[in-house]
Length: 307
Image (cartoon, rainbow, N blue to C red; front, side):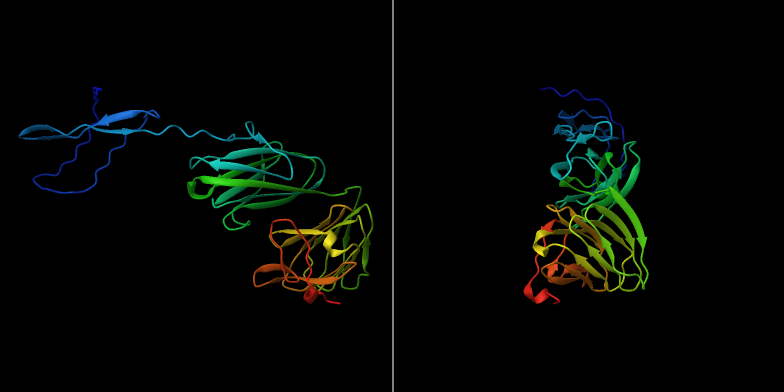
């Protein structure tokens, strides 16, 4: 093969010296997966000296696994996982998800890549974004949403490249009987019955709740030493968290509770046993069980039981 050279003029004047250092020249607009030849030419008063031929081959363009915008987003299902890759620094993978009803959508990545996440509505307008609320350097977004179409964008921090796994978890709410209650320190215990969905705004004192099987409740601003009665055995419930917010659900009966953990002990009183929920040493604990973003069965040790 005979090299055909063009000219890239970039004078580097070293004068009457002998030096050793790095020298860089940019060559924009190069084709992918192509071999190029180059040589250096030295020109001085004695004439012109040509360096030996050198070669390099550009790499093939990275293929994008998922679309970079809402129009080309990959359709995914609720309660699913999908593997992805940020191939180049400015890559952004978009996913389209449809919620069948009102509920809480939690999306997060897992893996070693430092990810950023965006949640967008059907018009592709940002609703929420996150950096490191998930495990390690992964993002985690949890939002209460209405039924409809949403988009998730996965990006990387500081143009890093690598692989990740996107996880989606959706918890629907009954939505049939929705009501709001503001509790005070003098409030009587409030009961949430089967089929009801109630939002409770708590006080700084002791808030008392009696959650019946099939009822759903979201507790907001619950800083005190609260007493939460939950109909059903503890082992019938799954638990996970988003940040410091705890989600407990009995999928068989449709019983669900969303409540923030705090530095104050809150007593969860199941039908079979009772246990404290608290943030301790930076960890969200249910008795001796550490609660993570991964859904898991409630496990109460005998030493954890309050009475």
